[in-house]
Amino acid sequence: MSPAIVRKYNHTGSLYQYFPIFLKKIFRHFYLTYIIKNPYYIHGNRFQKETYQNIVKIDLSKKFKELLSQKIPVTLFFGKQDTATPPELLFSKVPEARQITHLFSGGHDIANSNTKELVESIKKVI
Image 1 (tube, rainbow, N blue to C red):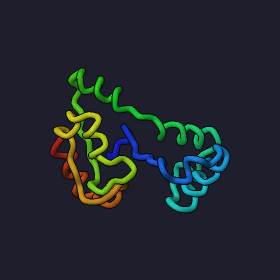
Image 2 (image 1 turned 120 degrees about the horizontal axis):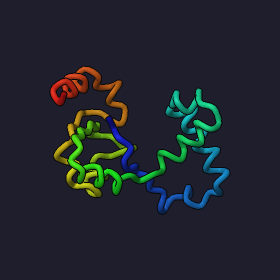
Image 3 (image 1 turned 45 degrees about the vertical axis):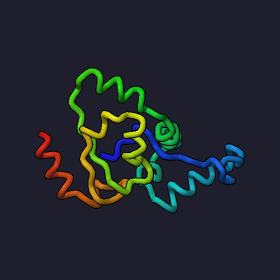
Image 4 (image 1 turned 135 degrees about the vertical axis):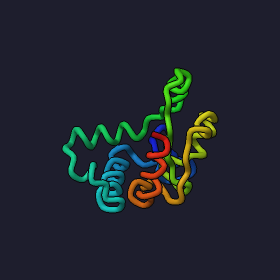
């Protein structure tokens, strides 16, 4: 659900790209703790927080293509309005993903916003 295979971080042309790394870390900590209130980040220890920060920066589109080439069954579920892991961004890098993707109204948190229809779709896939 809303897989973080590739994320949309476009800071080109913004002041953010010129911030020193320590300020970026402070801003990101504030954002994750007080704005989106990510429980995994808030309650995690230092190692977990640093690991989370590193994982969400990785572009896994090449690895995902390798997985698909092995004919391993995969089904993806995205919110159409997901701005963190936009389905269209994934489709532009891995066009084959379009055929195995179910789209729902909503954003990145479809597990909570679209629970019933998501569960029904998972049942159909199974």
